[in-house]
Image 1 (cartoon, rainbow, N blue to C red):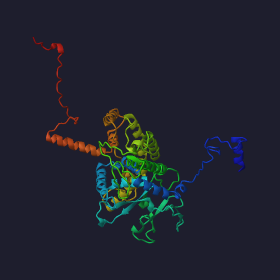
Image 2 (cartoon, rainbow, N blue to C red):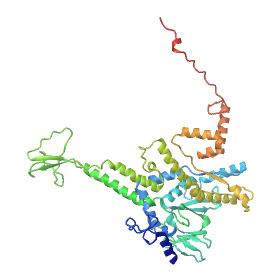
Image 3 (cartoon, rainbow, N blue to C red):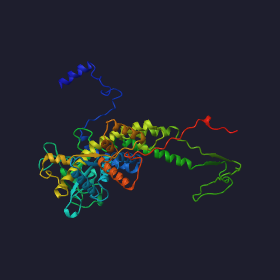
Length: 501
């Protein structure tokens, strides 16, 4: 304690209330700033469930929140992040790719989509709830699958954040995850059914809320780590929850106010209540006097009657700009562009929208390769290949014996996301062609950038050329042939034309 007092005197001199940073101290501008500094685990331990519930509520009823998630999933996954085996032997490589394509159809344990649809489902669950749980479900040979492995995507509610104890074997359980003495994940304690399904959940054990210990090798925990030591995920809407909710209420209040104001066309006042209104004695079922106006009506008022038309207050010219600024803050909090959040393209040009997309796509690429590929795709590829070799669907010498060198060679894979569609594809194609011709990029890299496998493209080109040659077809897209060009039409000077008499 004496050391810190000495350090404070050296830093601040006699005035211990001053600080070297504006954000430190108890001055007038900081006195109401109440801060906390929980650890990476504690920060989500008591808030994750509430954050997740509010995030799901906004996505269900708020169009902007749902649009943001849809945009992120469409850009991060699209039609799928697809593997390209890097095995050197062409025959083996083709056998792996062919078996993988067949298995993708059977990958979903629920039978609702294929492997790439599961990627999108897991990504959306991660964005909305902060994380996703994927179970590897191994099947029997009699199930008739291409490879006896299927995937089951679970919401993070299956992993109880309140389960914090010490296991009978001495391992520590934090937020439902079991760690060994070295801090490695060894198991996940999962609810058998969704805890929020209530009476709809199948009854099992303790009212459907019994947990089962699942080995960590059979569980994929997908989330974006933001802090060292973080073990659970944070919903991506966390920083925009309050603002989105307030904006939704404000916009709805403006709509209701305008709707209510538009219902009143005018108000008629009478000096004598017993007189007829606008010369007509009519009333509704509740006895309220009503008067109607029709187009072109020339209404003569009775003596003592006056009419005043409704002039409801407008939202003003700042309404659109106010919403625009608020939505920009929401988009920044969610890591997307304002245009993607709202669909408003009124104030963009080619340069501005391209600059915004480049920054957004850098973020998406970081998510693709650092989270989705590393946490989701890579372990699934390894488990799938091990199961395929075990069942004899693939013959890979040395793999089953546990030869580490051979296993690394067979497991080598490149994951290719769907290619980006640019604002001006002609300019991008010309730039890519120039990079290939100058040696700055290979054809394989250029094809992969568009989300395709270079070998598949080459085979398709060869098949197209062979079919064209067989049918005697020549296209200007085939560089093997030089099509004859038409001779240019001679230009005759105007003064060389014969003049009439």
